[in-house]
Image (tube, rainbow, N blue to C red):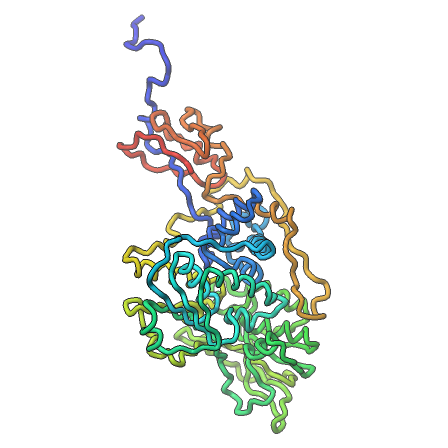
Length: 545
């Protein structure tokens, strides 16, 4: 028998990794919840901290991008939950409820925001508008040591959140306390103040215009203003505590969240409410969502539970009057919601008219920006030292989008002032789809919800309560940690070549012995490992975390 030219010894002498075509790589990815979050929160990161009861650390991580957790936890329409991969296992993580829990805890315990840069900067920034966009921008700039002055024409900060969001959704005290925490960073606030372009250019290095859309669009089909008002004015009266007297029947025209808010307030004031909406109900057009009503589905369901009647695919033909007295509204079926250019321009079917009795008609048909005194800046750009953000330029008109807009503006402004590349980074990492995960490793767990008041129409108390302590922890632990290693040890257990080495805080792959079988990637529950083409230069171990 012939002898081989080798001697017995350890198998470690054979670098079997040279056989591989592919090799595993640990890659942090953005979960789909963060991908769709308008405020760009790192949701997985703060949920992980919350699951360990590291509450203040979780709050600080969350507020790196969004200084309004108690507010947004109540009013945000949480697209993050619709995108949550856990929907394919049982139900989405209740992200907004945990966000609210953290925000409420911060208020109760008096947590204060901390500066990122202790070194004060010499440049100054003016912000016009103390709504969510302006305050978000001011928050980021102040944390980095910049001198910030906010001007607002209203008598209180908060923009539409303060003036037009009903208390049953957002108690005014909650918003006020979160705003106070932002202003405590040393921000100067001037209320009841309108500024012009010359003042801003003369006194400040840069300007951020976040003027919002505080001017309601008016209905032009009736010359009389009797028994007609805008949804925004109606909500402002309520939030200012002014007495509001209503007839027995009120018609609300519009399909957005303002219309639903108005209708639910009308019910709380004892009148019947009918909402006339030009669009179709939710779920009618999966391929053409623009034809569905823009209001939040959750709010619509709540409104219907409170006795609000909704009439879909209909619009106002004209108001029916006897002299100045309003009898009601003649509506007709809508044939087309948008014109050929895609603009909202309903077209009616003749012969489909019907009458709705109403002693008051409230039009919630949108708002627009008021550029008085700032007309020349409406078309300005960053090269002129002017940034524009928030609802004035956004199509979504969501508070979370405004917060994200303020953050992005602040990062861009700081880059401009420092002469460096913007530190703002969009979510350029790849997204983890549920098909890339091994969901069978996760146990099914019921979703925890806050309780709802049974008697909702007795006043303007909050409808939904927050999570209990134990429920907040349980809910945070339901996060699948999509795309981010949580040290489950699967890659280490399943590797047939012992090429995955466990260490404190993660794992290392020794490519000298990894044959690229892909078992570690296949068995990674959260989709954190990718198989990539083997590089001829890759000899050093690759590390997770």
